Amino acid sequence: MSHLMNTYARQNVAFVRGEGVWLWDEDGRKYLDALAGIAVNTLGYGHPKLTRALSARLASGVIHTSNLWRIPDQEAAAERVAEITGLDEVFFCNSGLEANECAIKIARKYGHERGIAEPAIVVMEKAFHGRSLATLSATGSRKVQAGFEPLVSGFVRVPLNDLEAVRHVAEHNKNVAAVFIEPIQGEGGINVARLEYLRGLYELCQRKHWLF
Ligand SMILES: Cc1ncc(COP(=O)(O)O)c(C=O)c1O
Image (cartoon, rainbow, N blue to C red; front, side, top):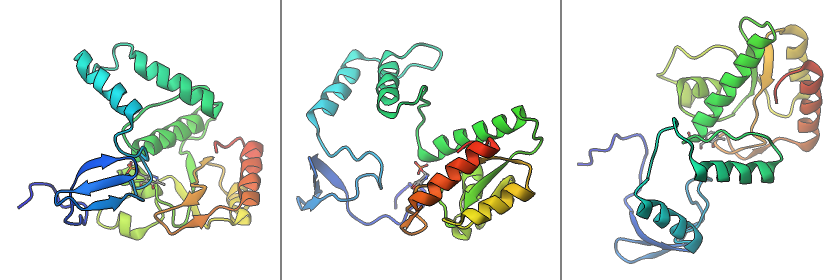
């Protein structure tokens, strides 16, 4: 019996070797990997640059230090991300839900700074934002929320691609501080936010001084 908590319906296959886009299981069967880490860590397998960087880190003996000290590799990675995105600052975390928790906290803090006692965030139907309490509350799926109530409050849900619905919220809810959206929903089905919708949403956010 596995001592792993049963949080995933895992298939009975384990990969023991990888090269490029290929994986091999314990019985030597070869697979073309078209999934990676479910949309994250799409790095392929055994890339020489990654292997070199990880090996050098291991060989240095310094696998981890606390955030109390400077971490030069982290600074270099942040510089590169800033260069690519054109944004100023980077927050590194361990998972998508942590990134989203951070975004929710930033939105709430921003709301408080604007004098809103109970800041609200506009979220989309069928959205998926993670499985922590705040992010599952922001998620638009009862399946993800069921059993974990009470949910975190402060989310206003609207249908995707419906700018009128967001305008309606803007008119009636003075507590909104931000809009939270996946440009392409994955978990909720492959639902694409239309470009003109995203542009309209961005303009509305600029006008209302909401984070986007
Ligand atoms: C759009 C989206 N947001 C957030 C998450 C949560 O990420 P994580 O599982 O790394 O916490 C996922 C994970 O599938 C996702 O697809």
